[in-house]
Length: 453
Image (cartoon, rainbow, N blue to C red; front, side):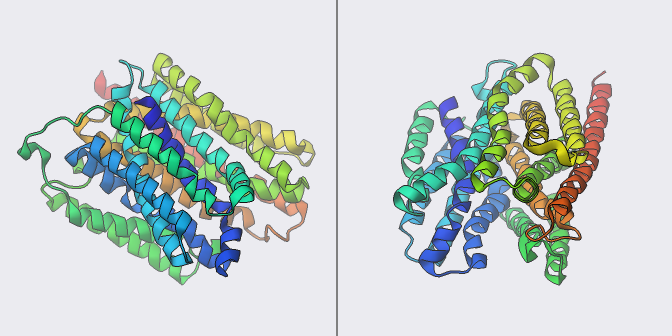
């Protein structure tokens, strides 16, 4: 069972990271522009972001096992279709289907964590799943480069087919059967709420990605549409017999705090992917290969620290480890904000490793606390909300942190000193976000303790 869940997280992470390296080859093969081939990545991310909560709720109602198996099968079939796509529109459509399958894999894999763990051992399982996600993120670019060199861009997607088949077989044999429920207990599916939430999240994701980092009328219009959509979604949830997200969850302050800190932390972590390559290449004059090796230090640290972080959360308690992880991330961001020009590669990589270890601690403790507290019949939607908060943080970070970094200078043409100043400015802002996350987490955990005593 654990092998199936881990492989689901690995494949869904690979689906995001492996495609980026193939964009130039796809553009050349189909005679497409950079803006057109970007939809290969955007279609996948939009499908995951907009549909993950609806799939999680559907899993709670219709059975998480059967829906996860269907998601793995869809991901595998879509990967095969991506590899055979005769034109760019077909490839984008197949990527959207692949994202739908990935939404089921990401949203439902974590919902099995509590059942897969021994009593009080959810943190270890969450650490393993976080490790596999980090491995997939780190492995994607390197593996993608090797696959393109060996067989062209189509192998980027065809390579996922045998892994998808293995994941389906492991899940089929290892996942527990869905519990039998009475018809009245199952309830109905909130189709209107699902559509409203999907449109709202799609508008927000497009607002963050449109314009290439600049803010224009389109971005503001999409943000306004997302705000109106969120209001309509809450109103629809209040009237629905079986809402997509029960209002009790929306009013749960501890749940909101944990999801909010997840989004803030993910926003900060995206800065390392957006800002790091420019700093290493422009300020430190590293070759592309050396930049890749330096950036791999972060995901490698996450992969090595994920399982130990989960075990520490089980032993020391999720509250303490959550606070410790955020404090460690804040200290590392302060070091990057004060990074001297003479710091060199070590001056950047060392705080990056500390930042990533702190992230692993936070993620393992925060995620296990969320899933342990979730009612058994709502674990699918809570797991999906957790992944949604992470994805929204990554989407926001790509735009917001990139804008902070490039403020007053173009990263591709700026002098090395200006790029270094942009790095420091970005992590000053990251410190503010992490301080807010630390305060939110501390106050929420304190209020929760007071309620229990």
